[in-house]
View 1 (tube, rainbow, N blue to C red):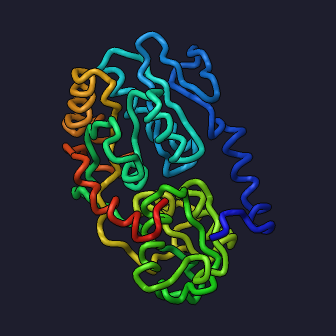
View 2: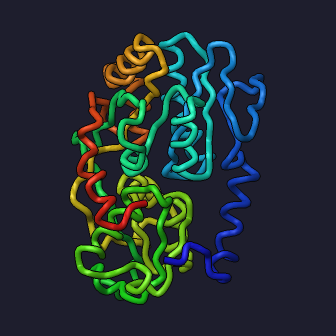
Length: 307
């Protein structure tokens, strides 16, 4: 599979990435306080009592900061500590920070968590409910006016994936093709990675791609009433349910701190303000979760030849 962007696609997506860099930088560390010292670009040393948090972002960096700011501020306030949101371009970079002891907390994609090595020193803190259920779906989307009706119709199409470690795209569509004896490199006319689900949606909308596999919560949020995308895109395939993305912490974080973070998340839905924060993210509430919950996602990885 060719992960390089074709020239026409590259030209169309350049404004997206420039906008991302100019508005916050996909590799820049940001936080709610303008008085915080900037972090080094490659390592994330802890400041005095600072909670270092990363989000394996399903959307671009600015949207991630806006969406998670209130949630992270709430968790940090329960600990009586400031926090710093650490952003990286790829899910793999977030995993590297996590394994390198450079984070205290991370919100991961299910596929990103499943890609961690066996026995990784990481504790699952909690996971969100979506529509009151502990599962979410990958949806394959196309433009509403195009003729595609099923996944099989996409043979020869230009297909957009989000991040290489994403479960919803590319792991689910690759597994779908593998079970049909197909290879993405030969089934699709071309493929490329956008780096985030909202960018994949935009790529389809702008005809840079014919189709994309994206997280259903992001799709609903981006294409809701009042948005430019409303009624312009439609779903032609929906995956089985997958366990919702986990919140994790390295086991090097003291057990008492992990317990307080877990408590803050599990109780968030009990106040009107907390429910408003959750609704902004498309969540109902947080519930306990365990590493074994993600075994179905782990089982998909060897089916597609690893990551």
